[in-house]
Image (tube, rainbow, N blue to C red; front, side):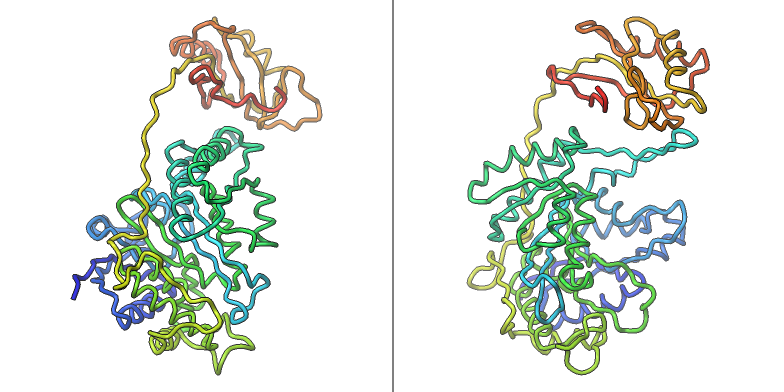
Length: 490
């Protein structure tokens, strides 16, 4: 008998305890070799004063087991509460969010019966960095952070996932026609890595048309890799297209720790009624079993689940013309899966986890894909100017330009002023709506050196005359390439 693998388990809030109990019942019946350690997370911990919904001692279990099976949790409404999921993903470096989305027609009603795709979502960066500020009476800001190492890790993960799972195509989706530097970097890294996988077809789509095609022709996609926010939205769309978000599992993979969960929420409106569908969490547990080196058990459970769906055993939200009898409750459904352990579906395609050997075993952490990341040598960085953001209400662009031009210090000149990203001076239009937030670009003549002391001198001159400077961004070149956007109108 092989050794049990410790895993950290959280029963969560709302329907979480019900679907976790159902999932663990199936795992035990199937012979999963696991030793659960239970922790408390979610609403109770938020109310106890832990702003991220997790107590300090719970981290000890996560760092020790390195595997987390998590039920949905409830985040209380109102300020002061951080997202537990985002906190765990970023703290433990869970950079890859993997969400398979499969149709089970005709047994689950869907308009897209041939859909079978996987969304690989970057999990740590983008707008989910959560860096937000109120800068003026009228303007709020959220910073979008995209890093080269983050792009390289997630793009390579997507290609390695496709290769390991026999997928034939990887699609990258960004909005780099607008966000040319941040999304542009993601697209550029995709183009750099793709030639290393010549057997895999590749394409890039702008996210808006990509989302439209996903919603209308999902069968054209195989693996989709995308930054954080787009991936969050796309994966919910894709899960819903399969027939129910309640069927979709999610794996969050890092170099050291992995977390497995359903993508749906805690559904407090049906909590305690025993009618919730445990499928999303059960299929997440299947991904977990593969990850910890128990693919034979994972395969047995997954095929039994497929046979259960095929036999018309459905919970309330899937109940329809192909269902048998009354809608099944959470535990009834789990028992139905247990009854079919060892069986395979007859019409739906059975699953086979390719890395299981003849004995049905696999190396530990079989789903973890190593991603080598050699760091690049630092670029030669040159300071060439500064964008100064100014709060000024009830004034015109001409007024702001006149005030700043009188205060500019060497070696700078005032090159332009923008408002909400649109150039309003020089050459602005009277029809452009302006708010109280002005970006003022100061640059030195071509080839002239700028120092941080020069910028400090400029800021001193501005603030000494009452200019309300709310933020600055240095303008730099990297190996001679401009490291900042020109802005609309330039």
